[in-house]
Image: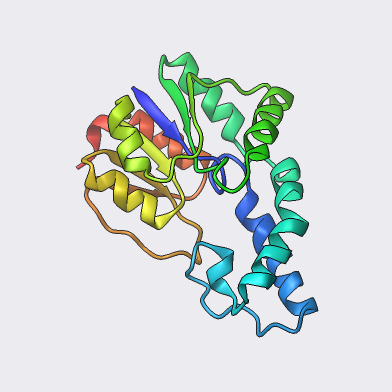
Length: 192
């Protein structure tokens, strides 16, 4: 089976890191706190000007990508999936914000001893990418990506953080951790 894996919020715990840093930044800059907790992009969670958003990104983006921990159980489950003969593909929008993201990501993979069968950076339309490369199931945490992937007729595991919007579709199953991911992939043929 061909499995697509997103990075931020799925393989790396960047979402929580960003959330903490964004709320601290907002508080220290006289913000009003989160205005919409269900928004997956921190930029839309706060009432920030474009200048504040850019200031935050300049200060924190690289630090987060260099230091966010790998999700608990991810390396173990990925190695088990490879042992089972599955092909693993990174499909991420990383590299779209700035090119150094790709270099940072490859460095992190080397440090963590993570290897994949293919890498698709700057992928803003993951549904299209999944269809083009023959992905059987995609693992993603962004509501919009889950919607695009399932609209292409591809199964998707929605790694949903409790604060994010619920998504109900017959081709999508919700997961909360890497043990859930392992279970869903092992039982892939039983999906109804």
